[in-house]
Length: 149
Ligand code: HEM
View 1 (cartoon, helix red, strand yellow):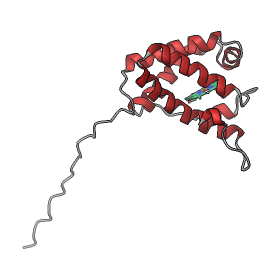
View 2 (cartoon, protein in one colour):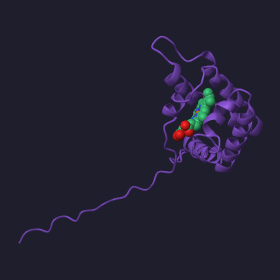
View 3 (spheres, helix red, strand yellow):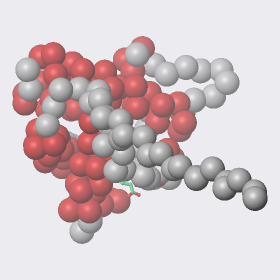
View 4 (cartoon, protein in one colour):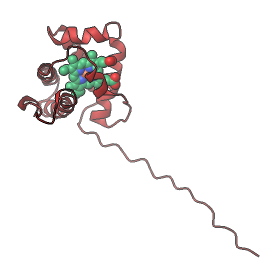
């Protein structure tokens, strides 16, 4: 009599708890996104750049940006998109616009959060801004500017 085959055991590993990159809540991220884009819309240079692409679609953009920042800061894994492709396709985007963007981001985060939290978020934003800048303006012969370091 042949032996019974060993039963197949499928083990599920317990879900790993996600470690947030920054100590911030989804509600605080929503506040950051709200305030940041409210400020951006009033910005004399950046406002029209965003408006040209997002007129009538701001709600969708804000939702997407909430997902993006929750994924980045809380590792929630809920954002998927193509930021490089989207920014490379933006008409009229100039190198210095990233400096303005970072300046506004720092101002908004600094106004909302404790200095440690604002600094932690801004470091991450700068890192992403640098990669978007390099994707659009980088060549084998130049590097991201000092102010994006
Ligand atoms: C130079 C300044 C910037 C301008 C003028 C700008 C403008 C825009 C615009 C108009 C869109 C909508 C694009 C579309 O739907 O086709 C967009 C999308 C987005 N932006 Fe920016 N952006 C800037 C910098 C940044 C930076 C520094 C970050 C991140 C730290 C960022 C993150 C994103 C993300 C995640 C999206 C959504 C992409 C997608 O999944 O569709 N942007 N941006």
